[in-house]
Image (tube, rainbow, N blue to C red):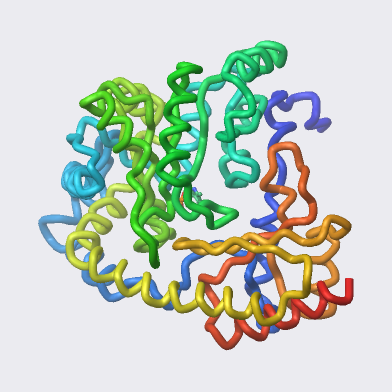
Length: 402
Ligand SMILES: Cc1ncc(COP(=O)(O)O)c(C=O)c1O
């Protein structure tokens, strides 16, 4: 069978993710990995899940937990999420919330909802690799979400037209972004909304790491700022994507979209067509776990991850040679390194795996145009402070020799 002749053009843009390939390395015991941006499994609230699964499967509950359910999602969970959104100055009701199979599914649906092949999506430079992967299937072009004001809205529009479509939305992760760990200032958030107004486009706010703040003052979500300007979520152009993956556990695949009800209505139709609904039992269990432990659990995650972040920043200061720069994240899981111009993160990884047994993610894949090869992403989420120091020391020596 010559498969190429039956494949849709969109499939040519689906590439194996460097991160997925690298995650395989985590199984090798002698590799010190700063590669996977995953939660530390030792920190999962396993007891709470055990209790919740027992409750969900008890007589009288099991039928609902094991049955099909509605596409919008489990009502008590949507109510709990609406309560959390209200704490972020995002007043909304359950009609503004759709439960998705992880926030990754939300990114896929939003690409499907808004991108006609040839349209332009504005993304930060670098951006979350998984978002590029999700959107790529819908054959967009990418342009840089540049908030410096050096490019006017009309220049951005002209470029999108020349590329064969129109600008549809800006995608960004304003808190502790993957891969840079950086947080967008209040002024930059306001500038994003102003640019979106000028272009008359949607804004997709990826809040995957939002609760993992270790220090500094919280900055309001773009959706909260937009609601403050317009008086209601129904008048907002921001589509907020939340996730339980970093706050509770990713294995249940639970995320949500919070947006104006017409957007939610469209996404519900999409979900009906794609997978009917997110797993009933996983939604019921997540609701029980969230109500039982969320606040307490997130507080303990923050304490542990903050210590690892501190250890990584201290190790970088101690071991990195001249000419290497890095970010200082206030939360999340990542530090972003910029190497001297002549170096390449991919080449360094090959050397590092062979000679130092240290893994990380080369930065190039996070740029929509594959540029900036002299960068890399380090995750501090899964290593203890002692191993962080050891791994960064080895990496620093390797960079020094390169
Ligand atoms: C920025 C960002 N968005 C979304 C996701 C997807 O998360 P999930 O589908 O597990 O909610 C991730 C996962 O690492 C991420 O880093």
